[in-house]
Each structure stands twice: as C-alpha cells, then as structure tokens.
Picture 1 (cartoon, rainbow, N blue to C red):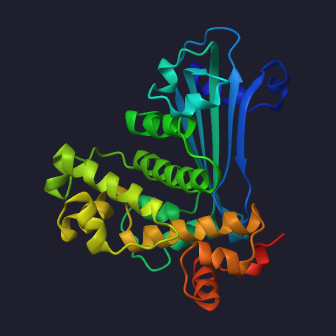
Picture 2: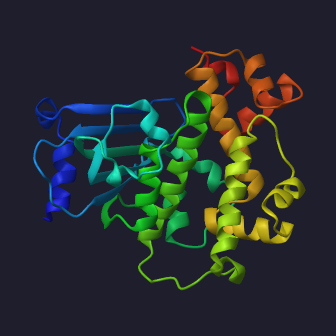
Picture 3: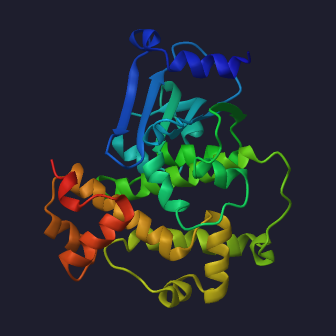
Length: 306
C-alpha cells in the first residue's frame, strides 16, 4: 500500500478527525444533485506524500437506484488563510503565505439518477460511457495519481472569489469537470492530440474555456451560440465542436444542465418559490420551467421545496 493510499484512507476514518482540527468545511446535500464534502485539516506535522485520487463505482443489480460513483481526493502541501479576502488573491493554495499547512480531503458523490441525464439518449461507445450508464456490472475501486488538470480544478475549488448563488454555479461546474477528467483514468491507452486540430493551439482552448465561463455567467439570462461566438471571437462551428471535445457535451446540454442544478439549489437550499426560481433562471413562464425541470431531474419543482 502506498503512502498516498494510507493518507487517503486515514483522512476518511472517523477516528482520526478529533485529532485533526478542521480549518474549513463545505458541503452540499441536495437530493438528486451532486453531493459533496470538502474538508481542510490542519497538518500538525509535515506530510511528505504523493497526492492521491480514488474512484469508487458501486453497482447494485437488484436495486439500480442504489448505483453511484464516488470520487475522493487527498491533497497535501497547501496552506489555509483565515482572511476571507484571500480568496481573491492570485496566489495558488500552494503558494499562499498563510501559516496553516493543510491536508485537503474532497469527497464527491454522483447518484445514478443524476448521471442518467448524460447517457439516456446517447449510444454507448466505450468503457467510460458504460460506467456512466451503469452498464458495467461489477463494482470496482480505482486509485490514480492527481494529474495537473485535476489538481488545477481542486485548487480552483479551494481558491475562488465567488459567494452565494454564483459560488453554487461555479462549484457544480468544476465538479463535473473533475468527473470528466477522472473518467479518463479508465482508459488505459494514451490518447494523442485532439480530434479538433484547432484545439492544439492554446489560444483556441482558452477561447472554449472562456465560452464556458460566459455561459455560467448567463445562467439567468440565456445567450445564443451566435452571441457566445462573438464574445470569444471564434467561429460558431469551432465553438460548438471544441466545447463538445473539451467538456464531453454540447453547449445547449451543458447550459441546461447547469441551469437546472442551480434551480435545485435555489429551491432546496434557499427555499425560493417556484415562481421566483423560474424568473431567476430566465424562463418566460412557470409551466415552461416546471416542464424543463421535470424532464431534467424527474421531479416537480415543488417536490424540492422544504
């Protein structure tokens, strides 16, 4: 057993928590949504270890509703700053001048009902698709190192300036990006380059990432692909093709999914009325919102009201 694995298991044992001070805790437990826990523990001693990631795939043939995918990550070497304004600073968590070294533990839970939206009308082409659709019939756990792409997302979850509703939109989008990168670990063969050759240019990739950020900023004010392309100064076709390759989904499906996830948050966590949520998400009528919400989540909006 590697030291990274030992740390990962140690950080998730209930018995260890009393001896490790929690400096920061963030969680979301919304039915039918992405549920997560982020804990930053004070590292009293210097920890020297590889960083570790884990994917647990749970398959239940008898009760399919119990199927889920869980991602766990343990990151060391960061520092925590109590100053809230620190979130706006340009330093990465590793470079922070704060005095509190941390062990950062992330736990993300994706239910089968949540993941079904990505595979319900899609032809399964590879192992990653089979796992997302729960067509792989054996439970498994896979350990993997944290590559730079995953580390950048994890750092972004710890170090951002969003709060309130915008924080919810940002975090959920980042977690899905993390799921996408983690699923790549299921493919043994090394993929070379991009299918869309223009993505080999860094500026083109930055344009696609910028397009996604613009979509998140317009959750309550839908933007057309034509307008989006103008904002990032790229050809419409390139934006659509590049978005699908980088994020594994279409622009419309991504936007609609993020919209409905934010709707869950506003209904369940904030207790807003269906009318208020419909208006906040830019719908012209409650009936249109309710129909879209039911199609996406399988629930009526009123069912999430506390």
